[in-house]
Length: 127
Image 1 (cartoon, rainbow, N blue to C red):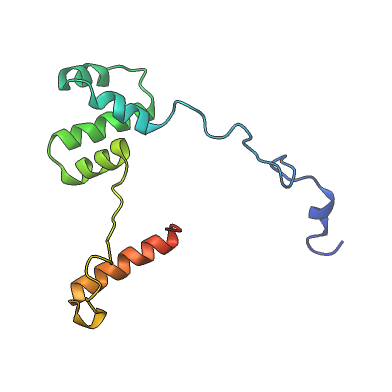
Image 2 (image 1 turned 90 degrees about the vertical axis):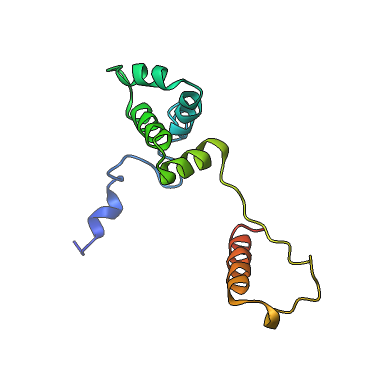
């Protein structure tokens, strides 16, 4: 039998037929860490401390509580992550039409890099 020939006659190992989703129901609802972040951010620190002692917490719940703990302790990266997850990432925009007289040759290197970065992001996002 030629090399690889045996794969053509056997069904796929994972049991899924080509072209069909292996998870037709999609992501399980209610397991999002974001859901827990939003919920737990509304609690007092004492309530979160009591909740963290619950032995039945899921991994998502534990991670949410730890991230909130780091954020409330003042860790900037945790605060940024909390804000982006709970409220959504802030979209950067730049109005290039504010001063139509400005020429690229007159812009500072910093402004040019910022403009290029924003335009690149917008083109990747279809905006």
